[in-house]
Length: 157
Image (tube, rainbow, N blue to C red):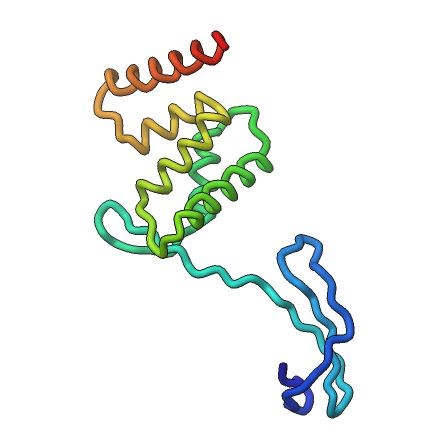
C-alpha cells in the first residue's frame, strides 16, 4: 500500500477492525519511511451480475429494482420494510449462487416469486399477475387454485 504522503510502497498495519455493518475491514496503517498514518478499507469485490432481458438486451443487476418490485407487490400489506430488504438479499444471494455471470430476467422473477409465496399470498398473486402476464381470468384462477391447494395440504399436516 503506497503512502499518500510520500508515495513509499511499504507500510505496516497498526490496527484492524470490522466496520459496523461487517461489510469491510478498516485498517490503520503507518508508512515505514515517513511515519504518516492513514486508513484503508478492505471490501469484498463481487463480480457484476448481468441480467439478460426478454428482448435480449443486457444490463447490470439492480438490487433496487428487485426491492421496488417487492414494495409494489406488498403495497398496503402489513409487511415491514426490513423484511423486504431481507427478501431482496435472499434473491440476490440465490442469483449469485447460480455461479453464472449472466442471469435471465426469468431467473429473477422466479426467485422473487419463491420469496413472495412464503411471505404473503396476496403479494405473490399481485407480482405473478404482472410477471406471468396473465392473459385472462382463467390463468389468474389457476394460480389462485394452486395457492388454495397448497394451503389445504399444509392444513392437513
